[in-house]
Length: 107
Figure (cartoon, rainbow, N blue to C red):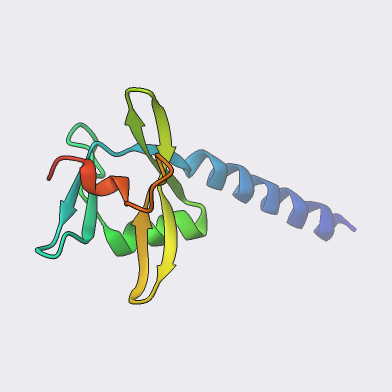
């Protein structure tokens, strides 16, 4: 019985530490390739920037970090989408099918 109590305590401490590690990251710029695809997210004021697309996708899918764009009229979450050519990042700021991340300045 003592083992189960200790094991539960260790698990709880691990979960609490993991929650503390979660960061809510503001994105103010994007890096794009010549086709206009988003290859990295940036915030020049933060140590993590730039963060490559594959790392951001992992962060979001594993629940390690969230990413958002702080528009003047409110925040928009960045999410992972499964497309024809694989996973990519996008926002849905408005009711268009356009990816609003492309509207951000280059980094």
